[in-house]
Image (cartoon, rainbow, N blue to C red; front, side):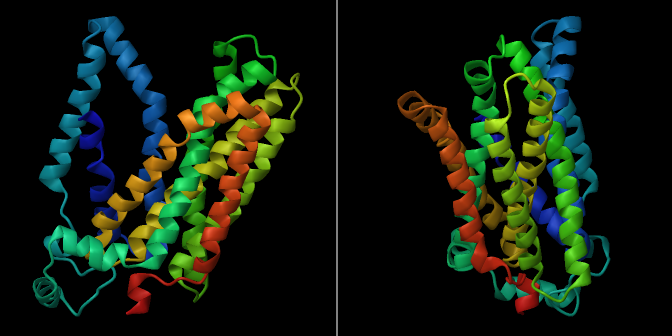
Amino acid sequence: MNGILQGFGAPSCAKILTSWFAASERGTYWGMWNIAHNLGGFLAPILAGTAARTLGWSWGLWAPGLIALIVGVIIVSTLKDCPEDKGFYPVEPESKGRNDTKAANTSNDQTLIQNLFNNVLSNPFIWGLAFTYFCVYVVRQGITSWSVFYLIKEKGVIDAGAAAVRVSGLELGGLFGSLIAGRISDGLISSSNRGAVGNRIRVVIGYLIGVATMLIAFKMVPSGWPVTQSIIVFMIGFFLYGPQMLIGLCGAEIVGRRSVGASEGFLGWIAYLGAANAGVPLSLLVQQYGWDAFFTALLSACALATLLLAPLVDAKSYLQRK
């Protein structure tokens, strides 16, 4: 239930961001939202650990929950779905004004299932993004789950604590990677007339090449170079979280504003199927064929993701296609 309830968050946030920010600035703000992964992963143990040590173990659970509840109440009380609800003009109007928008909503009134099938699953670009997301999450979960064991088994790190220190920069690298990827993609959109989604896809492909390069470096770096290993892990996080952020943004921009929630929900479902396949399947692969097969699988995922994105390098957003 915890996972199911958390799953409602991302599609809702994506829909709000799409409504409040234009394409030329959306990548920057989407990246700022996306670093919640990294900041949460860093701050949650500190917050929960401090609360448990000070007030008792149960407060290690209560404290984060109460903070989330308070922030949630503030957001629900103050935030509106779109600028029109506050009396402003749409940042990227799909119609002439607020009344026309309401009329369009009425004429295009669809159920959740109809919206999913008619506007999301019928779009071939969404399927390309979904399978790319699958590949990216195989790599992401593979690195986060197995890098510590790899350092211990293959690089001679003495214990899990020492290995964890060397991979601790993954989330920090991801924080910077997400912010910079969003800003770069916004810059490309502002400076060219190509498809907005295609501009972001070009950034994703560049980042995937970076991920593959850093994976090869991680495998080849000598055992006695701990600082270099830490830098490489930082760069893996930098290049990995950029695609993880931008693919979701592309999925939101390639469908209409009314379909953003359905699009993000579908992409997220496929992504976590990829994360699941980085668990037992990768462990069996390592047991049967060794760590060379592990890195071959991750590099193959990067290559497949790049091939899947190739047809989208000139893709236009929903608004550009209208």
